[in-house]
Amino acid sequence: MTRSTKRKDSDPVRFAVVGLGYISQVAVLPAFEHAENAQLAALVSHDGEKRHRLGKKYGVYKVYSYEDYQDCLESGDIDAVYIALPNSLHREYAVKAAEAGIHVLCEKPMAVTEAECRDMIAAAESRGVKLMVAYRLHFDTANLEAIEVVRSGLIGEPRLFTSTFTMQVRDRDNIRLDAALGGGTLYDIGVYCINAARALFRAEPSEVLAISANNGEVRFREVDEMTSAVLKFPKERLASFTTSFGAEDVASYRVVGTEGELELDSAYEYAESMTLRVRVGDETTKKRLGKRDQFAPELIEFSRCIKEDRTPEPSGEEGLADVRVIRALYESARNGRIMVLPPFTKRARPDLSQAIERPPVREPELVGAAPPSGK
Image 1: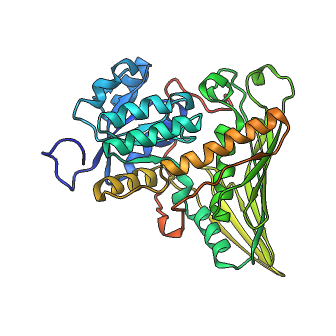
Image 2: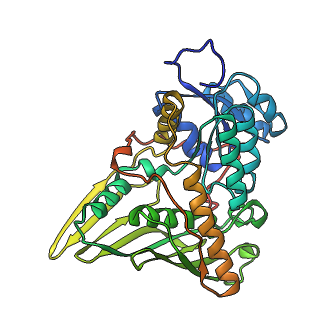
Image 3: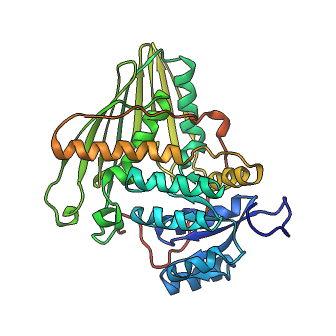
């Protein structure tokens, strides 16, 4: 632990949740009930009503505005922060926390640029604090079992990955549609497709190509309505995917190998069950995995890393790996050319040993927040 020496090793890691928008309220805050080694100790938000009502609901009496963030970091009441702010603010709030000796668990994408990611990594390393990017699917049994199937050779050599991740973002004020806040389909949902392809192929792409489309609706005046991408991996393998903020909800991927294929339906969802289908020759197997709490495992594993002084997986390096691909894809869409990526070495990748299962959370009443659909 980096804070009070009076605390025992058996005490839970104390978190401040920074940003009380939709994902924090519907998933992060309720997850502390299932994270036995983590404690919700403080809330940070610009909205006084959120601070008051959510603080009362969760029994948290240390509440701060963004202007008081430094006071929160220096209070001695927290050991870590969970940053759930707009993408453009991740670097600033993560670096401030690291410089104060506070561990950082940051929502994905890690940041908007590679330089911002490297700043976050450097700040954490210089102060000896842990930095983890909140890739919840790195602890999800369904996705990890898909990785295990590919690694086992059951479907032969994996040759291609295809994916669709689409949703309707109807609220014009949603941060996903604000370019200045790091909005856009690749930052928000394309990061899942990129991360899945990298995890399943166990490699980094060397070339990428993308094309974006926009139907002219006012809600898409600043960001892409949809983007299709192709990533080339070593051993002449290809991954392709399409993301959209203007289509019906779909979240699935397929890996086709030389001897079979697998498909994971609802692969990127956190509030639905998933179905893993594997076909080899004429034999097909299906496995349905029910809805689970995907956020408590992040809190649990990050707290373990803090207590056991381990490097988290997923690390800041994992976040950087995806952001560099996102940036190259948007550049490709702008200039109409294939972008060649410099070599990138990744030291750790997710596997089935990381699976952590907890029961689903109860859907909470929202305070000043709404789902992306605006419903």
